[in-house]
Amino acid sequence: MDEQRARALLEAERAEVQSLLSQTQEAAEEDREQEGVTGDIADVAQPLTAEGMDDAIAENLRDRLDAIERALDRIAKGTYGKSVRSGTPIPDERLEADPAAELTVEEAAAER
Image (cartoon, rainbow, N blue to C red; front, top):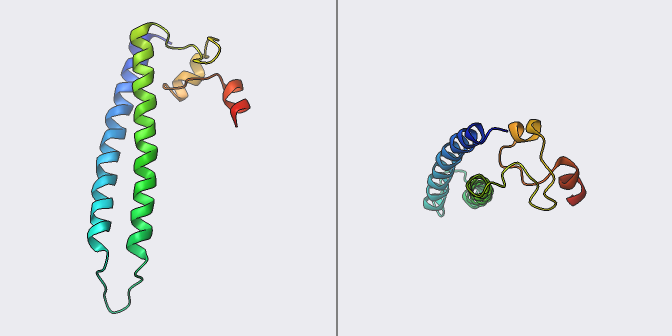
């Protein structure tokens, strides 16, 4: 994949993930503020459940941001598009689907 195209895809995704992370963190804060607030019929565990879900989503988004940053670093180093494990070229189709891919499909499947 062309480095310019890869960089554009990664930067666009980074902006989207950062926005989602910000929204998720705001939702988590709102859930924390709801702890202890009860109405006529309230499930006291609901804010804790929502908070836990928000935290899990935020962790996944931070992991994705890390993967995007590693991919941008590989572009800067000239190693983008190759498996970080074997150095095997990653097909353009895979990089189009996941510009931050670090492994070939076969390597990723073997890891599961």
